[in-house]
Image (cartoon, rainbow, N blue to C red; front, side, top):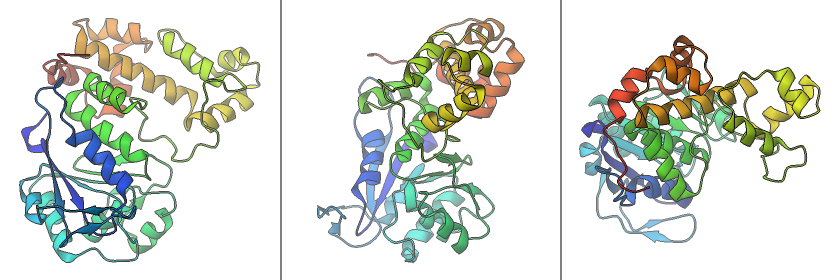
Length: 323
């Protein structure tokens, strides 16, 4: 992990939504003795306190916005009112952070703070599906994507509503420490270790372990047979469905296509092998089901923004002392 990103500061303000705020505190603020080094963490107040939370609690934050000046990663939880302009002092602070190279992250409607600061101009971004139209209307220079869980533009990252904030925070941990550490944090949270950012925000019928059409059972089987070649026709036949019905049911219950889901799982397996073994990229590609190193590199770059070789070099040093 870059030392520049290690100092995480979360912004608090009056009428704060406790859920998104709690996500950032849970992922980055809890001590994790099994991972060395871990993030340093602080909370700063965007305005004088005590700060009232929407749940009725009060928050006493001793640090002010000057804490952002030392941050490598700034996280803005859901903003209290999408029609209210954030305090100018807050906008100046996050703007300065971005100008000196800090990562700036929004969860849910926190995207409106980043937008008001001018950090999303010309970039792709997202927010809660209820607010995407308003974000696009207020800030027409932003490429607002209503159909994703989160958007990673490198230095600037935005998450959709509520639980998508967990996905983005775990994505940051994965970027900084690798897949195995991110999976360890996910286990502590009792949450799936990776949902691809391009997955749909809203899934009509989430997968249940006892789902009537057996989709959960199929996903478990696919996860155990990633090295095989899978076709829509064969999977549909296995589920006793037409190809069209199978493709529709799969997207309804996972938010993505079978091909993208399988590629995502294969990349996850490749990350684990890169972190924990010395096997070559050609052998790794075959073992993960990609068939060729070229295809592995294509999907790995698409989903992680780096190459398998660079990933191995970056994360082989991050070892968990306890599992």
